Image (tube, rainbow, N blue to C red; front, top):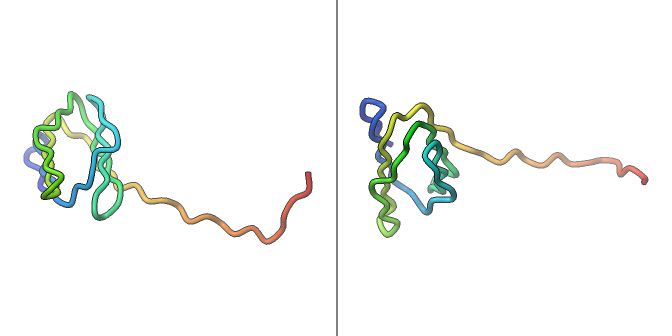
Length: 79
């Protein structure tokens, strides 16, 4: 990841875009799912062959999304 002045974000390891609108882009990356949040987001570069992407806008947040491990149930309830 390279973030320049909260205006341009360059990413490596991108596998695909899972969702996109002007306030959020959700990427599948080699490190898991990552959400970019901001205003008037624009995907300027998407090169899936090389795993590169670039987003420009006013970027306000970056979040890696991890799945929570499922809890094991010791007892089953009766319905």
